[in-house]
Length: 374
Image (cartoon, rainbow, N blue to C red; front, top):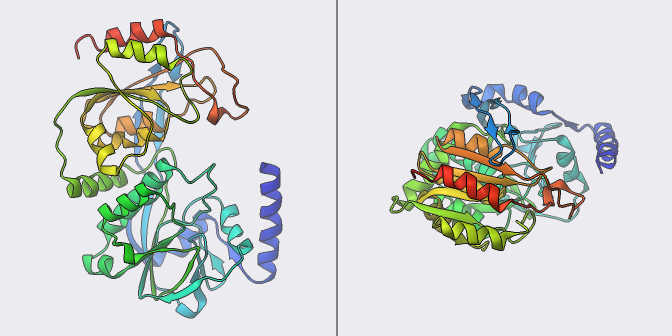
């Protein structure tokens, strides 16, 4: 797959150059947009402590790591309208350059493979927060939307005068999910100002852009801006200190979950099934949690709603150990534990989809210690 992608990238890049179109890298894009910087925040360095496996094994799940965010930008770009347009997957073609504010250029090149006419509309100000093909593999899930779109929009909102925000339309390749609609409403976009860039070709005189930072280590300022905006709209207060288990219905399920649930009920855990919930419901669940346990999954993006001191206990498959949520836990001033068993389930050739086995004895011993004085 990577070889094919690289081949397509080389061929498309060469063809575009022949017709005078130059895809810029992220670094080149940031340099090109320097005169239009509206807001910039420096990189942040956060020390993530080591995490021991919550089992009878002395092995570490994570070694001590320094997480380094990328600089975050908001640009107020005023191009020559006749030479500028938004591409189907949300990127901006201006003069001869394709700007890259998010990730690899391969996805930007795919704009030129998309066929079909779009509806042309004119607006004075366009907010273009996301320039990426939603492939359902690398990008397109709940974590991606919340971290790379919703949080970025809150950065943009706090950087703009209210009059500019109120006038602008929003256009990007929509995720087409209920949670997306919930978040955009809470962030302050009415439905009539939201356009899918795959269907609409927006003509504009002014474009508000922002970059995506580190995928695993997002800018804490973005997370706090999202937290302020959403919680300010919902006005939810903590009313409980629940112990919750987040089940998964799809990939990365706990194969011996029935035995695990029996154990967790001994410790007064509430078992939450994997089903669609509104953003307000998800915020309330996580805000009222004191201890959260479950297999690694996008639902843990919601720990940004947790109160300081809440404990996240993450279960991993042997070959799928990543530190998205160790980092978010540290940023949100939470406690964090992690566990994986030595048994490889082998139910998938893709590590991202492999199921999880847990030792009930391991979890019983670990939870007894962690919850002894909780």
